[in-house]
Image (tube, rainbow, N blue to C red; front, side, top):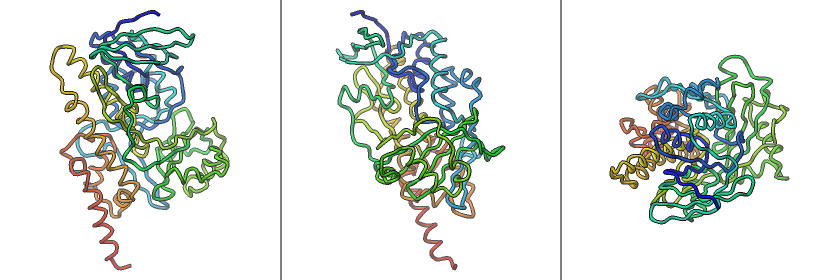
Length: 416
């Protein structure tokens, strides 16, 4: 069996893995990336939020991505019957990017991976991790390539960015139940032949069918659109007696007064994919010689598109902390990695939970709008969930519920 020696082994070539690998490479760290799948490949998570742009810029991946002319995402629209709430990222509390992208992830991730390769990073596709063992902080990883050849990779540190593959959580028994209720989704792409001109045709939208059930519509610059339905697992399963994903998604589209004309009868470009009980959590996010990033650690819910942002945030942070440690600067991984990431995750977890209770929807659709409140919520939706100058970050655990309660009380007291 051949042996290879590197400083850092990155498992997974998605956004988290590419950001960490690119950052480490530019700082002269010997890094190797192994990716189980062949790119391009289908993956969910097609709506980004502005916070990711900071990471792409810092990892020097922005220019390659920008050259692809992906659809610009300037905000997000939420629809509930005849009520509409639009968030504009340029009208948010605090500093930060005012836009991001809506992307077919197959093209997006492949562009990133190829740019990382162009920079000189050793990236092996179709290479599966079979075993990992640690001796102190040093690791030995056995991988198998597409031809069945085995190899030992010796590394001083592992960054697990394996996403839904969850390599280290599986091998090291790190999985733990999520705090979120079980939800599932079904999605596909369509040729958006009935797309309207201008903003109406390109704006990402979330159409609320019931309090806990919603349809996503994510238009791409190539003329296709991602369509997905999300809801409690029992509801999603009830959409088709035969457990037919295509039938289930067609039935969900029928429930949308807003989108039924645009998408009724539209041909699906691939058999709709189902993600069941997708929320994930882990017992710990790091250990001697490794860190978990992106979906390999925590995944919340697609409603606010936070997945890629947490992936790139954790990937960049893990890379920086390894670099710091390699320079013999003490690192407190519990404080600097876990506690930092958990603060942001806690904020988004509250927003996801309050979305499904209906409290956040009460704030979104209340009339007349409160511009100051909207700016502060918009900053959270843009991914700036570590800015504790924002009271909707600092007091996230009660501010939404309290405001929704007051608004509902006012509504009950007001004359018809």
